[in-house]
Every structure is written in structure tokens, then in C-alpha cells.
Length: 341
Image 1 (cartoon, one colour):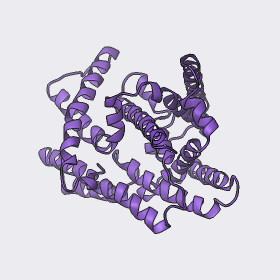
Image 2 (tube, rainbow, N blue to C red):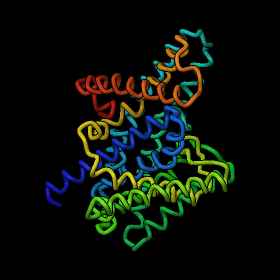
Image 3 (tube, one colour):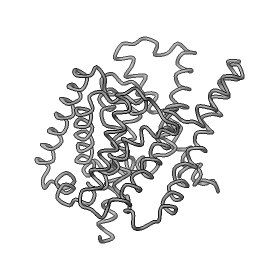
Image 4 (cartoon, one colour):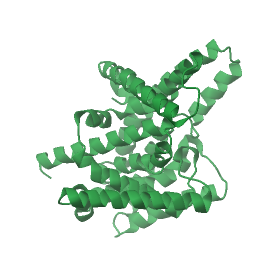
């Protein structure tokens, strides 16, 4: 692959990741209708995006790969999570919470079962480690990796059907997420499929693909709710009707992939290149703090659509105005890699 092609590829991935980050923000801001829709695909999107640049099992040994990802994901998990914990310690001290509250928080953070927004980091790490093992053991046989990865995903989904619940460090989510990681890897190495969505050959055709993906996403999401009474929320282990959930998620992801090359901007690309701090701190620090301020000044306390939209818009602006400068300051620290930046 030429240098120019690689730059183009990285630029497109950054844009898709930036769009995904905005989707996470809006999803957590409880925007009427939009948040529920974005939950149908925004977390599978991130797992799949992480698979796009997977180097394959032959470039690194298991130890090299595990350590490289540990430094890039798990060390930031503890660093970013510790800042969230410090924020909550301040809140607990202000509200005179008992010592048991601090201990429960520490235990939940260390065990990590769907806890805080940083749940994603442990799930991402173990999904990559698990997929590396599958790839290492089965890559010599055609389609074996796909079959085994799918079987592991189905097993992960069956665990919830059987009521087995969460596993420490979100290993339960990793069982399912590794299949989205696999699909990302396969997408990047299938020229025909990749070019169909990334470079469809005309704006009219691109618009048609986007509309088709959106319609499939919405219809499958509605069918998921009708048949199961649930929608997708990986952070709490809710998958609804697994078939419709998967169709809806993939349609939403492919819609983002098709849109990404034509909505590229420096701002969206910046978000895509700087997801770690913004993803980890926006919900459990900025949104929580804004909620306390709004309650103190009796702002946005009604639940009509106009108020909810105004609250979400203002909070989104606060997230960006606060965390982008923080991100830039952290970049200048000697220990910036510990924050994943």
C-alpha cells in the first residue's frame, strides 16, 4: 500500500471514529429519539473500528501483542479511571458519604463489571487478546477464524440468555466484541466490499447506500424491540433479539463508513485522533458535574422536548470546551502515554 493510500485510509478511519465519539456523546445526553437510535450501533462501531488496523497474528508474538495493547489500553484504564474515582471521592466527601461507599467504588473499579465509561477499555483489551488467540490458532484454514470467532460470539450471547451475567474485567462483553473486531479486520482486507462503501463511485450512489443502510438499521432496531422488548446496550449486557440487533448494528456501522469519506473535517478528525480522554471523562465527570449545576440553579428541570434538547446542546458544548483543552494539556505531560494520548 502506498504512503498516499495509507494516509487516506487513516484519515477516513479518524473521521469514522470521530463520528462514533459524537454518537457516544449524544447517546449519553439522552437526546429525545436520537440517543435510543445511536445505541443501536455506536459501541459495535468502536469495536469494529479497532479491528480495521489489526496487524494480523504473524507480526507479533502473543507476549509482544499483549504487552503492546496492555500499555495502550490497560495502563490508561487505571490512569483515566483513577481521575474519575478522584472526582467521585470529592463528591462523596462533599455529601458526607460513609466509608463503605468509597470501598464499594474501589471494588467495582478493580473488578470492573460494566462500571463507568471505562468499561469499554477492558472489554476492548480482552476482545483483542481473545481474537489474537483465535487468529493464531486457526488462521491456516480458510474461514476457520470467522467460524470460531462467530461461535465464541454466540456463546457470549447465550450466556446472557442463560442468565449468567457479567464477568470480571468485562470478559463477557469481550466474547461478543471480538466478533465485531474480526469483522473490522475482514472489512479492511476485502477490497470489493471496502470500496463499495468507501468509494461507491458517485454521490448519488453513496446517498442511496446511506439511505438503504439507515432504513435497514431502523427496521431491524424496531423489530428487535417488538420481538424482545429490548434494544442494544453492550455496557449493561442487553442485546435484545440477537439477529435483529446484529443486522441493525452492522447497517448503522456501514452507514457511518459510507458517510465518513465525505464529511471529513479537521474537527471530526481531531475527535477521532483523541478519543481516549474525551470518551472516558465526558460522561462520569462532565455530564455528572453539569447535572449537579443544573439542579443547583434549577435549570432544565422539566422534561419537555425543547428543554431536553437545550440541556443536551449546552452540555455537549461544555464537554468540548472543557475536555479538548484538558486533552491538549495532558499531551504535554511527560507521562501523557499513561493517559492514552
